[in-house]
Length: 341
Ligand code: Q9C
Ligand code: ZN
Image (cartoon, rainbow, N blue to C red; front, top):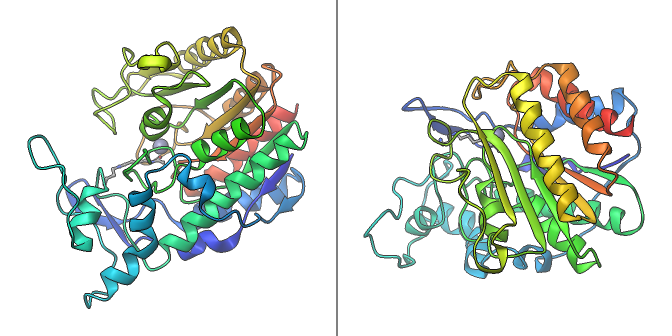
């Protein structure tokens, strides 16, 4: 399987996020993708190719134009106010506050954010546009007839919704890839999110559509981030009713419980009649992950890949979360080698 990758992700390097009530060094850091690339090479997964530039058109198909344009100029506007530190939102547009876009860049960052885990840095824009190009270039590999492809995207994307960022995510790489596949002729597509955290952004983008079945296996939002989405009764709306499936699992769920949910999700994908699959591949389900509470071991990731292969679908993997940096390369690439059999 080929991997699409660029070093441009290094340009995005957040300094801190709010964690346990304290400004803490960002868990989402460049070494994460470096470790995955290292394992892609060590396990000789296949060729590594650079993304092609695709401009903003594929991004604007799944995100609000105002949101995208905000990111385009945000660092320049923020740094022009004399601040050279990363920006983090310090408030949110909660219940009964006016849903008005502020004029000041700092207010706009608050308006377009759902948490304080997604800093605006000097290199955020070039990195997130590069990640979108990685997602699109990988989708084009599937459209050209490859059976599977790995988009080594960083920063991750699945918490990014139509018009807000959060959870280390800015542009929704998996949604951008999914839309590219649909525009390239795929009629019914499944997006399966196996990251520890609910893929609220991807759900948001496709919630009213029947051409994408979105499924997510994740820590129960009763106790886990992102708290406000990811419950089992979210089944889609309008044309999308019946095309959204959440599998929340209690924090601490064991490996057997996790694979039972995967089995249910696979059955659903098959019943839907998907013609292609996009996998939001987070490996923060690992037993050693510092911010998550599932218990998968290295070998369980091989089993995950093998199960997905049995669906028999052209499959694009998009890298998402995973914070046990020394293990994420092994875990992510285990899924891919398990898939290849
Ligand atoms: N300070 C992914 O795995 N934690 N994101 C709190 C606010 C958020 C995880 C962030 C965890 C997000 C892609
Ligand atoms: Zn996650």
